[in-house]
Image 1 (spheres, helix red, strand yellow):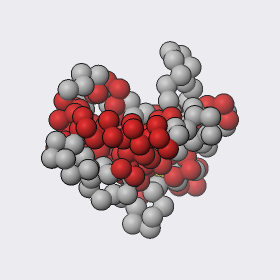
Image 2 (cartoon, one colour):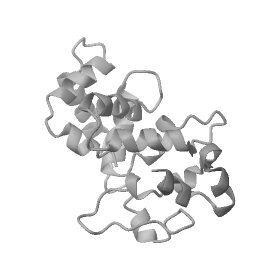
Image 3 (cartoon, helix red, strand yellow):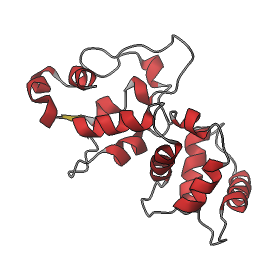
Length: 186
């Protein structure tokens, strides 16, 4: 992992790799945060770190900005990743991470306003990330409202109009594919 992190850093920062931060712009282009396009279709990034192929950038994970925010310990708001942040991210997305760990991080990634619950706005953002931001892929207001209503009916056990972490865990526990696909938020 250290070698991978170091090769992503700009050349002038490689000597002090353990104290350097990987710029957010490069983190967003990581193959680990790209939507998998099928077997053998991924490629390694350039030595400079950011992937030069714009076709691969279009396949970027719709949650990549949230993933950076959740895993970054940067205090300056840059959302760049330190080596430890990078290791944490790789560990959570590895096949060996438990579904409990994956659920914890997935919940925080989906909590767009960082308030500790998934409210209607978080669910709307989540659906928009999954369906795309273009006009043709966006749901109508009525479709969005119905979908969020259905999600809350299935998930909101205490009927307060939000999904807390325990409710999220309960939903995830009923999904046998969660751990596999959450490896996966990538």
